[in-house]
Amino acid sequence: MHADTVPISLAAACRLIETQFPQFAGLPLKVLEGGTDHAIYRIADIAVARFPRRAADADACRQKLAAEAEALCELAACAPVPVPEPLGIGSPGEGYPLFWAMQTFLPGTVATPGMLQASRDFAGDLASLITRLRAADTRGRRFDGNGRGGDLKHHAAWVETCFRNSEGLLDVPRLRTLWERLRQLPREGADVMSHRDLIPGNILVRGGRLAGLLDGGAFGPADPALDLVAGWHMLDAPRRQLLRDALGSGDIEWQRGAAWAFQQAIGLVWYYRTSNPAMSALGKTTLERLLNAPEISSS
Image (cartoon, rainbow, N blue to C red; front, side):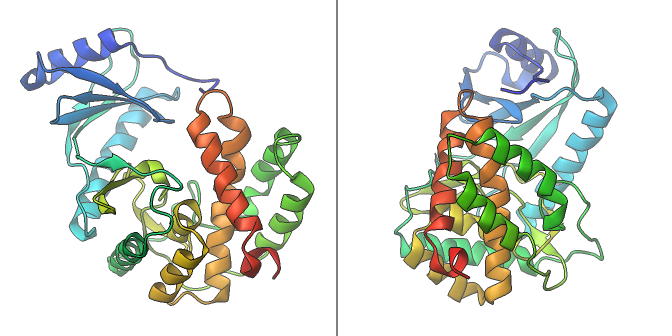
């Protein structure tokens, strides 16, 4: 999936779990598909083991996992739905060179881009979620400079790389025109607490409603518009309007949310075209929604 992928086999994962977390020994182990930055193994209906896929310094990896566990606990304290609970950090072994994380398992169905796109209830759930996260105390912290959530212009080089690799896959000239405008949008408002990766794969649903959040280890301060990407990834136009109205997003904030969705989606289509077709398809769906939204493409 990545040029710097660190492989781990099911057998090695099983031995590491049984050795370091013996309370789970003998329980069925299943590979969960879809992880891009982690190989994820489900342990019965109790826990999941998350093994980082990307090569990294082992100590830096351990520190990152510890920070993610702390962020998960902070997210759980304010989220209106369940969040995985950290259970511990595993050590390298069995040929796997990095530290890894254990978390509780959450029941539910992983969302898809179109699964609940026309649901008023789900749109309302997303609005309630974002409202609750925004209300959490930043404790004086600001965006840490990692990933999305800061200055849109800092992503220009990556987006240009994506344009070059998307020739023949997407309408690149039209997308270039849209990005040139979106990346110039001024910032409004101080940082607020944000999940920072509200894509369908990190959303659990049950009975047509929001049921849980995954991959919340990046929870932290960011652009107030960042979590609006959820609307572009998962809602049709009428339901996006419900989300916008519920959050009271003005024109600039709403369009910046579209810009962050663009920045994320443009990298999914070509990068995961063969290694993760579902992620590639998500990128196409989101870009189509952006191009077909009059308030974004015609502004």
